[in-house]
Length: 377
Image (cartoon, rainbow, N blue to C red; front, side, top):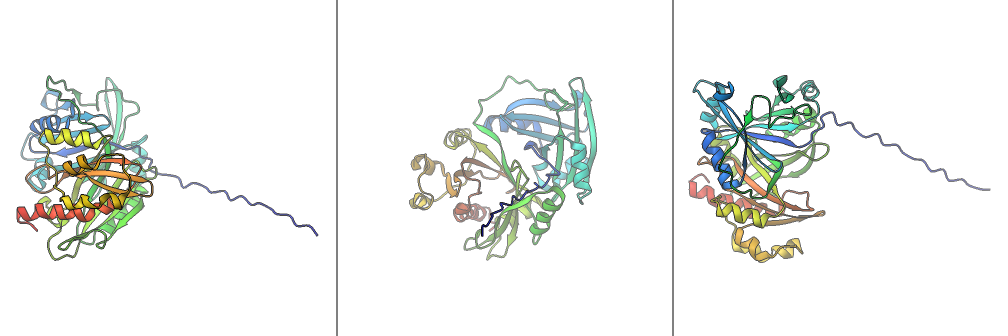
């Protein structure tokens, strides 16, 4: 009696990504003085002048300066009058991130897909045109007053977007090696992390790829919880933080108090050489959190071999962590304004896809030292 083995092949139908995203198009900040802010970002961070919109272009309500470095684009917008939404945003929050603009092939479909899944519309699809072609922009609300814009520019060949002119400057400091937005972190209120996780899952088709609770992110005094949301191809990642119970006020609570609500806590900027980038940034006056020397005593026994010498990393205060894919190097700036709100992370990934869990304790203790100096711990 013979037996026959039949091999059965299972066909896996891939889940369609109803909202394909191709990275961050730009980050737009509402600021009190865009002209001065642009000068700061050029001087300190090495951005280059790109485009401008204001009274000279027919825009009577606000002025916007666009700056760029490699694939990293910031828009700095300031109101020209006191009685508009931009002025009110700055009064409430200080300088902060208003728009996280995402690259899409079809801004109309992106708006339809997200609004029919429960997203609250900020801007219905609008086609902007000039001599260089046309771009389509739409948008939806997210946490706080933050907005996701969908930017379709496949039929546009201009300097930035219709309504902007080329901004040429005689002052163009050298770049600092910043490449693109790695991820962008939002702070939300008590018990609001999971509702916003559900928003990103249901409305935007994101997945929760990492979760941290107060056992992972805590010190003697404070704690928080965080979940990392990622779109299908991994080009866009939005960690979401909320406070957790602790003996004293956490950094998220401090942010929520001074920002007057939920918003973007920090933008992580990628570099291919963090030692060179951070050295240059420090030389230009950018301030970073200080890490105690004790952190470096056993860090290599925790993370294993790295390509870099430990001494310059310690001198600069750069943190090291690993996962199954490799390791990463990261450092965090102090707040960018006097309000202890938005700041930057500089990150270099050497294979790692994680977010520095092994660094949380050292980082948060450093943040608490700054809070204590401000009298807000």
